[in-house]
Length: 357
Image (tube, rainbow, N blue to C red; front, top):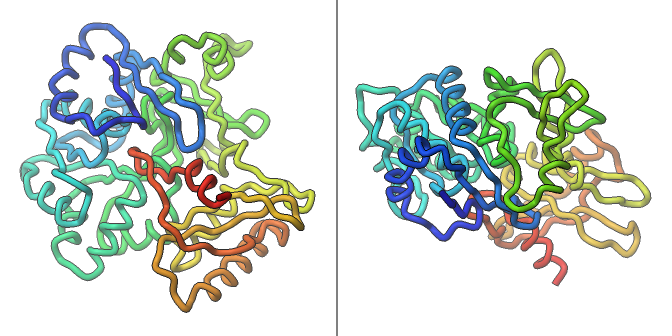
């Protein structure tokens, strides 16, 4: 079964759901083509066993019931919504048309009242709902009606989570990728059967949810899914992080680093700090060439510009200097539309190209 993943073209989720039972029982792999936010497209080979293991572990952690699909069905998080619903014997509910608060409220009202309710969203979708729910009863009641709202795809800004929880939303941060059959760490704790460890600062994942590898690329598969001296096969995530007392903390992509004035600066760390500044919760931080420092970071925020932009930049620079160091301070703040991948992640490659031009 071939799924286009993050390069999907809006395939009918009902068609995917109808094909899913046969695909899960056939023993044939499910293929998802994904490029992430900046990488080269690659096709991930997932076994039915890995996908089932992920869905089963999720049910063991948060419970099972009815699921609302608000993501593309050909994105691994959306596919998992359909698999969880299928294994629970529940009919998935589909959000119709573009994602809006009204569409989410309408879909939530279609869900059965006798079952626990669940959904998966990306941070941008949650932000849209929270903004509406802070002034309207409909989105607020819809958010509160879910037993758990899984948030993944990218880091969830702390201020956004606090606003959501203040409204009564039960938010669960998830960490994972297509290569791990979706989220495999919930609120910092690996799902049952999943092992996370940090080796030389890189997070490695092991367990029954791992993909078989990459279609037609044995060399990449061997590199990304090495077998250790202990005989255990692990997935090299490419993410920097730590595991302490069983809790996983992700600090960013190991390759999302610039050298500014001779100092290595993690753009993910900068972005995390910047998103803690009120008004910049959904900003994106991109590296650009800089005549003086070699490279510098730029904060990108959706229009429209405001008279507070200078203050926001000053606040962000002060926060970053205090948390990371002066060399990591963003050089400027730019207002422009942030392109999105179908998965809901910012298209950093397109944004970087646009800034360069």
